[in-house]
Image (cartoon, rainbow, N blue to C red; front, side):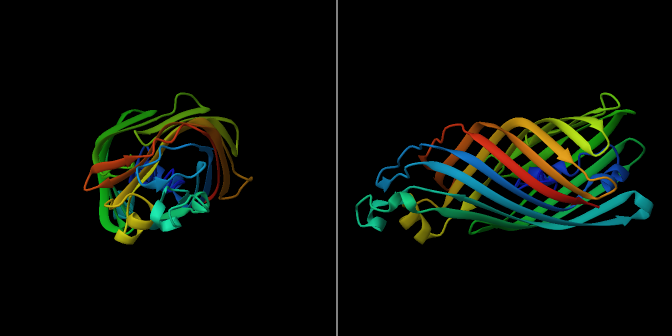
Length: 308
């Protein structure tokens, strides 16, 4: 659920897929999962730190496009749900260019942009255990930039009351722009008839208020990022010599709205707000070679999704 299967890029982005598992029971997941998600992000411009030997872009901004597809299989009379899918995400941004790559001058250097891609397959298994527990496992193999790897996660949900489910587990993902083991905490609570709290920390937290059928408004905090592998030629011409990856991540917070036309399965979504934490680093084997240190900026996020 990426904010992403339900979104994003959150993707990339493994934890974005875990958001899809924000459910009270597997049957609830059966109702809430998105089949198709298309989302576009636009972040404002800021300055960055210029690594030695490079020409920095005049302004650093980001655009992201994410497409997620899912197909659900129900087994064992609904006690097990398998969700198969895939996600593609592209992040377009200017990056510092090696001075030698632009003839040692600044001419045209600030015009260059780089697009960082992730293309992954998603496999999610939700299995009920007893009357109160759901076990969730996720594998996300694919290409993160030019690196082929598998990210994944597992957690267990427990129904603690008719209105609240709490879960915990561990993921191994690059959502922070670094490949790390990350503890996750999952909370879904229907605080009242019109208010739902839905969080998978640290990836996402939502508070939704439903004033009428088909319209949801709320507040969202989310984290999206990935560690993108670079080829030797990319690190030589587009950034820091010796770097074999670039880590990118953005944490955002702001209001959101979700509208479902009456009787339909399509939803239109919109978010806006500001970033509160960012990462853009060149690394080699987990060692940071250069930190671009982009500042916080406003963002707008528009999306369209179809439910199962």
